[in-house]
Length: 354
Image (spheres, rainbow, N blue to C red):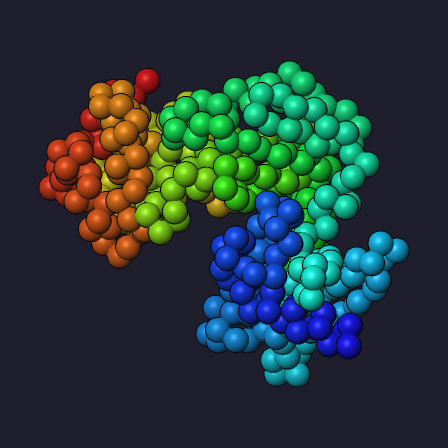
């Protein structure tokens, strides 16, 4: 009877995995923030773009154990067989607790980090195992505060978990394996719920604090404010280039690369390069996209001349679409830059950039 109810509720939890965390009726409410990270990794997990099948991977139970406090520990995976070859997409770990007549599910993060130390600086609570580089943590808090000021995120708090590497960051959230992350040593997972955010950062932790990517921090804060359905990705990436660089390359160095490219390609068609998201870097491991870099220049101009609210207007012009028509409608309204004068305008911005 217990297992029947548990499996029934688990199926309900998974059936609602694509919904926001507060709309999933089988999420344990007090663990909603941590579980939001896990649900982000579960969304669309059964789909395969390679095999063009929205229901390619199926869910299988791997293990079920009972802990001493009556909590169930559940491991499950999404697998498929193609041409007699077994394929593993991802494996997950969740905890289940009974409330009333039903079981509710959540990430194991709080349980797995209960022995960690904490340090509260501003609106950020840092969670770490051994030591914290307070100087670096303060810089992180200051950067976060500046983004929140731009975005109007008052009273927003953040839980920051400092992990040794990305494997640990995945494991404590309940993501045991995901093929998308194969070979990635350092990365982070994040989510927001209400006026709270969480960042589970897996980077090189030799100095007592992750060397956090400010580029990704910008994305996290913007997505805490604005629905992904409204955000234009090339503009979002442009802001991230400008405020936090890309792939460890700071914005001034990216600007130098653009200037050198423009000098050696005086006839470059920036409009075509924008629409094609052209990579103007010779390093294929760390691409620098033309549409992202151009938007960094445009955002810098708009913010200096008209203030950040106008940047938000461009940011929220709608999701990336073929031909970028929604983007260009917003661009001409805000800046006067049209498709016809785009090349000349971009060349001028590059020439005058400092």
